[in-house]
Length: 317
Image (cartoon, rainbow, N blue to C red; front, side, top):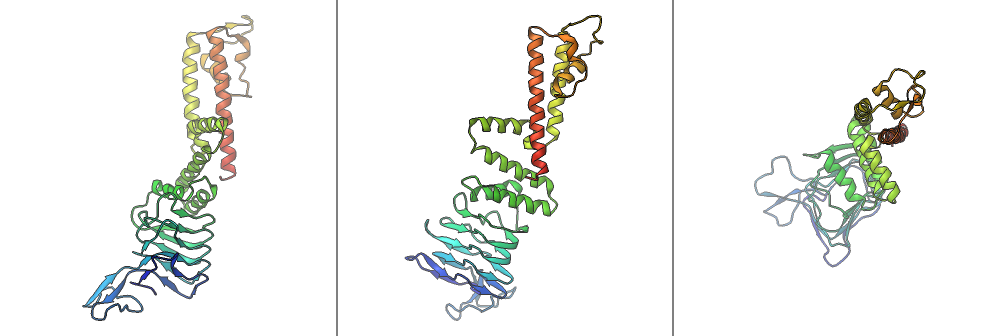
């Protein structure tokens, strides 16, 4: 228990250096009661729910870096109300720590970095206002099974949390978050996380890849919003039906051509591979020919985007 403690090493790299620490129960870096009658005394187990007279509450404060790498904590690491004052080159390092619960509920560090690389926890209890901003968080290989937010922590802020830990695109933190949300039954949020992953990945692609990515995003949201495909198909079908209803192409063989149906003709152009038996009997020219070509191309683009999205969903990525 380091409840209410104040650690200072302003001239060195770390104020607390305890790698490979083993604690059978919990490690408390939290606020604690400090008696005003005996200067600096701290009760060994903190305070009761109602502090006794003559006791003030003092938060845990650390000026300098902290190293708890490779620690094994039996119950929890509790950072409730903790304050870390670090320089840019200092770290709160929890590399490869293993514990059933991490309570990251302290004050947001203004400088330095929080390192969770390789750490493994079951429950991550956290607050949106406790995590550092972009460049201040590293969590490559950080695994957790359950998210237990304290206070308001919407999905948009959770995505900012992942983005802060990945100044350069890395898929793993997005996939870890998506898997955790899916396991808790929040499938819609999991799809939003994977969509955000694809959009981050798009930033790393060459121009051709970016254009194809934008197209997949606009049409079917990389397959995570398949209903968009039906909307696009309905819009193209309606536009084409109206156009061809007023611009009928000439028949190749008037005696053998089927009854003209602008809607069926448009659908035959839009749906690739499947032949509805309409477009082969007509000879479009001029603007009608260009409109037919555009419908065919848009149909193939939409079908390819849908296929790419479907394959991605089947791989659950």
